[in-house]
Image (cartoon, rainbow, N blue to C red; front, top):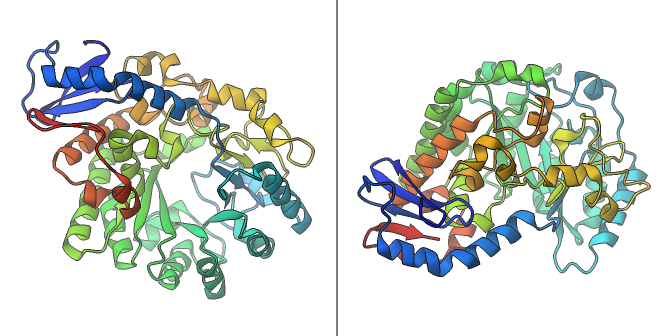
Length: 448
């Protein structure tokens, strides 16, 4: 290590990284000597380190809200095996009224007035379309003030709903865990006659390549082998982005569903390579959204969109969740965990919630305070998620449950960058905005 720089061998290259500033370089030939760093890399590092450190600190520790999640109902019409909410809440919880949702959005509009940009409001929860009438009325009323998003299992989605969402440029996430109906039904059982698989597939066809659509797949031991096939299936349905997210173990029994991490790495990488091949061969892009976020964490850290993979995470910092009862919690994963309410939106202010002990405690959780993470050169690429699930398992000050998976995926990401595959791995919009801030080519690749 020299001046904060670490060297580790990865796929036949030496990767030189400063974990704090995320300056990095790849050198074509392994150094063989962990102390040696090429002079031009060291000079470049010394020139940029202080500015990069400042920007990373600003990015990590700023408290500017970029999104609010609203859970308009606790209830759900499915019974997903990995849900972070207790069954009792999903069956017997409350739903917001039209007046309550309007009160919340009006209060948020006042809070963000003069911010200069539209804030993002995402309807989440168990299944928000159980109260779709009040959601759609809210979108119609506030569409000139907020950008809206919606996460759904699609069981209640109708063609007219899709038309409404597309017309109003609502970002939509549809949950689908496999290209095989039987596997999907095992993970996402529904008591309704139509399964999540049938309804989700029909909805994908209605959306017909809509740019604001994502598919979210939750990965467990039951569907881990299906990831490459799911990418192929979704590409045929004109889906441009899929997230392959590991199940969160906020409810401890869900840990029984954990996939073997080496298997997860294998099939996740196969899914990414399938996406690259389909994009290259057809000219119609499909990306793996959480892998794209890992790529951005390396080449443009401040451009990351998924704030789970940074330390401290975005919960109670860049976003928070308002539950159906009006409780403000740092993230939806904390909804059923006692002691993490920052106040109630119906009586308390947003500024008060942001400074509440609950929110501050989540923002205080950084990788530097976690024993193993503090020594890891990849700590600010991975972020050691997720504090809620780790709190449920004793303390949030421990490494990620999927630590080995993240390490191997990050190593693979560096390999893909070295191979010049960025154009196949990122959305067109961030690709357009990328520009070199520093670059060396004589030793291999050093870029930011």
